[in-house]
Amino acid sequence: MQQTDTARPAVPPSGLSPSRAGDFLTCPLLYRLRVIDRLPEPPSAAATRGTLVHAVLERLFDHPAAERTPDRALSLLRPQWERLLGERPELAELFPAAAADAEGLDGEALARWLADAEKLLGQWFRLEDPTRLEPVERELYVETVLDSGLKLRGYIDRVDVAPTGEVRLVDYKTGRAPSRDFEGKAMFQMKFYALVVWRWKGVIPKRLQLVYLGGAGEVVTYDPDEADLRSVERKLLALWEAICRAVATGEFPATRNRLCDWCDHQNSCPEFGGTPPPYPLPLQKTVTSMSSKES
Image (cartoon, rainbow, N blue to C red; front, side, top):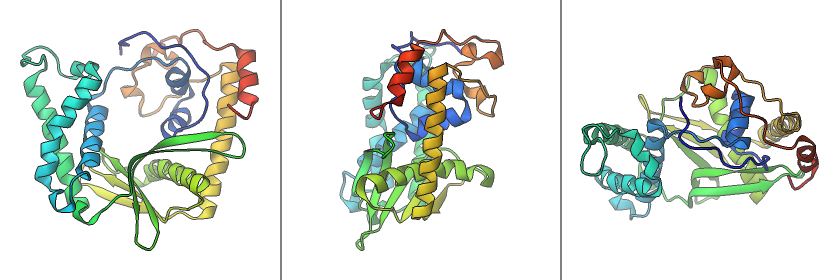
């Protein structure tokens, strides 16, 4: 797959998010190309649709409970798409100019894409009732620094707090619910967020909830405890040590996996006959910076 732009200046990593932790666990080379080389990636129709649905669900809670209806959600869809397009004009690449409308977008392809987003929103109303929800936070940025100096950060889609004080962290997924074999991997993201909230606010969330809008739709929940979160913390510290060693040596092996077919960096991957770009960081300087508490 072709890159759409030149890479941005390389920088050493300064912390972990759930997505980047997942990248390294899946394929260290993918982590390097995204985090250190910062190679651009063309927009994805599926990922952009997910961003759009998330934006609509966030904005829906701006309205009074009685107005949080399916029709209201659908009325937000086009304006949110236009906002995204204004912020990221490259998203127009998703809809080829052939048979394009006056906006320079393929009107028929765009209509089908928006219709798929409508189905996802309809699925959400079958899984949750927004008239009975009053989130205390939406798209909440969370960040904490562990005693080791490791910075953890990310965005939580929704935070609910019960009248009795229990906290629930909610994440929307626009794909299908994973099989039992991969469910733990999906919940890792939520445990990551729970650890950040615990170390940041001193509160262990009562419930972690994944809302899958694809396929038949499903809500998956998990109730963590302190032992769970301490285990996650140990795993993240071990992962960060592995990342630091890779950054210091420049050794980021490619790992073939079931996501390779969708990877935008096959031209830079030895598994597909490609060659990674020259390693962009000064190794000795990197070792020093990564060993400091501020890294």
